[in-house]
Length: 378
Image (cartoon, rainbow, N blue to C red; front, side, top):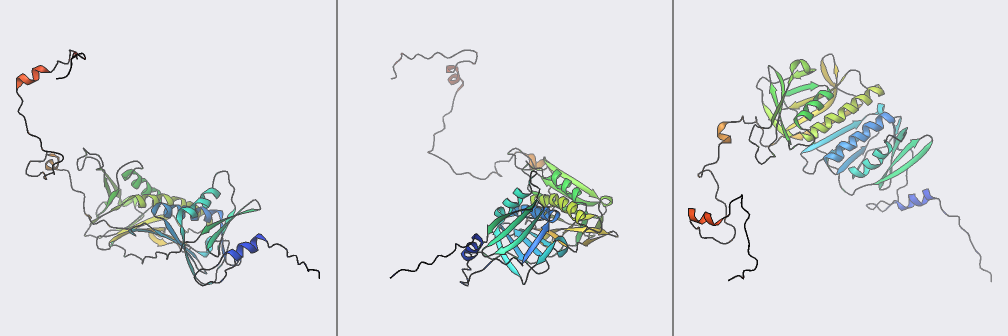
C-alpha cells in the first residue's frame, strides 16, 4: 500500500501573527480588525507624541480609551497627586472607525520610543495609523509609500481614571509662552526648586513665588524668586476678592506649559483654533487642586477648544500658604535651649584639660618637624 502524501502550503506571517494573539481572559482568539483604526496626519502626530512625552515624564503607565468619536489619553504619577488628560476629537483625524469603547494600558516609555524615532529630523513621516491587535497596539507609520509597524504590548492592569477635580474660585488665563517663561524663571532646569506658590493679588494680578533651600548654608528667603504677572498681561482674569495662596509641585506645570506651545502651533495649522491659544489656571485653597487647561480666547473670554482638550491637574501641598518672609531671628544661631539632644556615638571619652605648655611641643608652621626613624619605640 502506498501512503498518500498531502502537502500544505505554509501560512503567511499575518495569519501566524493573528493566531498567536489570544485573549487570556476569555480564551478566544482575537484577529486584527483593519476597519477599526485612527489615522493621524503629521500635525496630529506631533501633538500625540508630545502628549505621550508629558505622560512619560509624569508616570509609568499611559491609558488609552478608544471611542467611536474620539481618542482619550490619560496618565498620572505614582502617588496619583498629578494627572494629565488629553482628548483628540474627530477633526484631528484623517479617518476614524471604532465600534464601541475599549480601555487599554501600556507603558508610557514603550509607547514613546517608536513615536520619537518616527518624528526624528531625518525621518519624513507622513502620518500614523493606530490599531488594536490582540494584546498589542499597532503603530503603523507611513513615509513615501513605505509603511513601518511597531507593536506595543498591553499591560494587564486597570487604567487609573480619576474624577474631574473641583475648580477653585481664582481663574487667570495667559499665553502658553508667557506661563512657560514664568515657570522656567521660577524653576530652572538645574536647580533645587520643587515647589511654587500661586497667589491671587486682586489689585495687581497673579503672583508666582519659589524658594531654593537645597544648600546646606541657605537661609530662608535668601534664594527667593517672585514674578508678578500683571492684569494687563492676562487675557482673562477672575480673582476672588478674598485672595489666597496655594503651594504645589511646579515641574509638571512647567513641562505642560512648554508642551502647550507646541500644541498651539499644530492646532493652528490644522485650522482648529478660532482664536489665540491660552492656558487657564484655576486654583483655590478649598478646591484641593490646581487645574491648568488649554483654551482659546474668544471675545475676551477663555473658552474650551471643541476638537482637542488638554488638562493638567496637581494636588495642593499640605503646607499651603504664603512663604514666610526672612526675619533676623531665622538667621540667628541656635541657642542651647533650642538645640535638640543628639545621641552619642562610639565609646565615652574622658575630657582632658590642656595647658599652654602643652602646645610648645608642636613645631611652628615655618619649621619642618624632624622625625627620627632609627629610634626604637618604647
